[in-house]
Length: 141
Image (cartoon, rainbow, N blue to C red; front, side, top):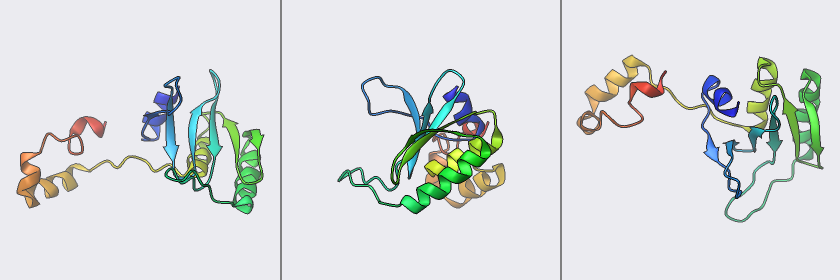
């Protein structure tokens, strides 16, 4: 289910750091993961510094995001002072967009054919690397 969600919204899947090796969608302030067979969940952990393990304290931001998420029909699963988790229906477009916003996930960039042609014409280095993953057509599908 997470794979189809990532494909639909052009998001990048990564293996989690846990021992179980499940896939997650990482963002700047959280991650999206599978909660159950029919639900996904978003975890809001703002500003986690991976080098030092320090997070940013922002209870007002979490309260505002939680309020808007509950208004769209998301279910609160964990509630902390400045972080928490919410589950949502991946088929509900409004909830999915809000979950992507909560986790601050950036979608993958897809080059248009015109922009790809300009890049290839402008740089001889890119002409030699025309088969690189960034310029391949199979990513834009």
